[in-house]
Image (cartoon, rainbow, N blue to C red; front, side, top):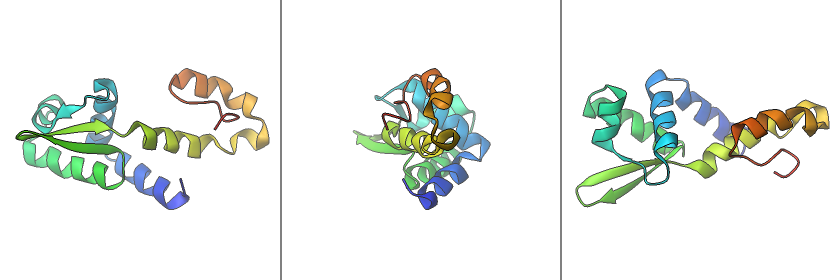
Length: 115
């Protein structure tokens, strides 16, 4: 991941509703959620959630898959992990053992030494 991609992702996540949606989709797992369910759970209108989901999809944080008449959105775990790795790759001036507790606490990412 390069700096421009990271800035785009952080920009998308800097909006409260979008951050809530991404966190919700991470919890939902790979099966994701229908757009209507996302709107209901986030407490926003269908048009509002559509706007936010499109932005999250544009920067690569969520994926969209059509299932019948619904669009299912899911967290893009590979891109989220890439964003975390981007933050941690230069950890503590080459001393990844300092960052190891943070990556271990995340429970989903390799340690910086393994990345």
